[in-house]
Amino acid sequence: AQTVTQSQPEMSVQEAETVTLSCTYDTSESDYYLFWYKQPPSRQMILVIRQEAYKQQNATENRFSVNFQKAAKSFSLKISDSQLGDAAMYFCAYRRGGSYIPTFGRGTSLIVHP
Amino acid sequence: ETGVTQTPRHLVMGMTNKKSLKCEQHLGHNAMYWYKQSAKKPLELMFVYNFKEQTENNSVPSRFSPECPNSSHLFLHLHTLQPEDSALYLCASSQELAETQYFGPGTRLLVL
Image 1 (cartoon, one colour):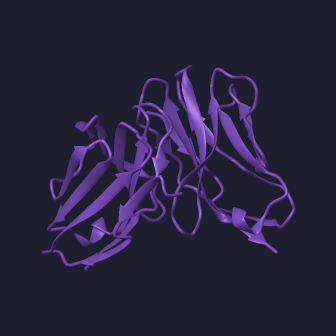
Image 2 (cartoon, rainbow over the protein chains, first blue to last red):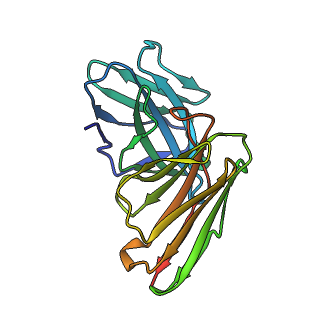
């Protein structure tokens, strides 16, 4: 069974600084997708970034970028120029290609200090 | 953030009550999902519907009963719940199965 591990229950960052959230996963599949979701205090889960395993290039969305290390099965999220609005729970998720059932990690709570 | 809406946002019910959670998606998607989010646990997929047909029941107790009358609406009927059922219940939708899911704001349920 696939597992997704987020080893940091909580992370802190100063406004305007950069923070990296870690995620590792375990799979024997070669075709899969990885996601980072953000869940602010209002509770609406929002897709931040998505990475296809077959793509070597790391996905980027504005201030959010990932470091996808396929061999190491690592998928970290880097947030640059952190803003107060970035404070939220961040969930890493894995989905096997062709499957519609994602596996989520337990989440990392990001605190942004002004 | 209005693509997937859920009502009510908060619900308190006794163990003998019957209530329903509603989810509506305005994205033209064909697949809808119910998840349970408990404190300090990963999201748990409960049910999946594709074109109104249930394709997944993740061993959910029968006190949770889903209903999908059309591709835009999804209900979760609750009866004789237990205190351990208290959680945030999230609805999601995707264009097709195995595509990116978009979530609603959730219903915070407290069972007394």
